[in-house]
Length: 331
Ligand code: SAM
Ligand code: SF4
Image (tube, rainbow, N blue to C red):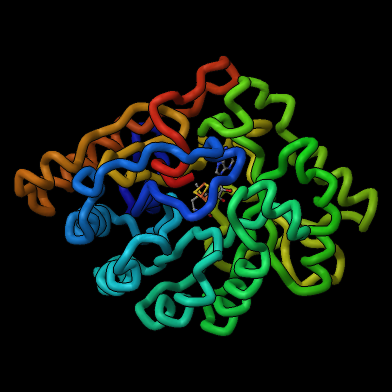
């Protein structure tokens, strides 16, 4: 049974950033030159991550997602998946990836016990993909997506951050994909974490709310119907276009915060437990782990994190997290 936090939310989900490094430099996540990588010794070792997940599982956390940075750039990631998949109590092990290396790893990840992947893709146009990610080739992501499908890492979800003036003219094209190819697309509102396009402080003007996206899609393609999603619905509100196989989701941290039903904890790449993405409150797990803390001791620290999980974020009061960029926390 999942533990309840101070506001009666059952905490059942742990997101782990396995590395702060990335093979892309998305404009909303990083500056062009990237962020200084943390030295290797500051990053949690795989056996330390395993201890944290064992402790989490004993507290009733059943769902784990590996993210980053880009999780597939960390050496030995398939071995980590294999060891976490074996932990009793973890029944949903997923990954969020930019997809660039999925063509190479999808089959091995599935064989090691990964269940599902979310793939980030903000545009359907190769030239624009290069502009947004600064380094990547869209073709590699499409190859990765197909490899994931063949490996059974399903349902695949596509994460699309919508930014005014950059890709908001493509929301209808993405919606069409749910009819033509059965993609499950989730539009994410831009958040003020990171220091790419947001460095000038003008992030609010670049946010395109779910309401606006929905209006544009409905004007072009017809009314959205509420959809049931079998697994991993998370914070998204899900819909379907009439007759479409795939779904459309909206993740609205800005226009309609979903803190009251948040079920997650986060672990940063350098071993800090972060009960809320958008609050800088953290508990250090790395130091105790390196001093030999066992599962029981880590469990006590996780419990402290659960008990102190903030009620909600405070972006609307113009308070934004400052300590870290998104690639360290894991999105
Ligand atoms: N590198 C992987 C990827 O891009 O999928 C995993 C890490 S990335 C930080 C996780 C998710 O956070 C991605 O879907 C990304 O689009 C999203 N993200 C990053 N910066 C964001 C921001 N400022 N606002 C909203 N979403 C953001
Ligand atoms: Fe890398 Fe993901 Fe950040 Fe893009 S969003 S720079 S792929 S960590």
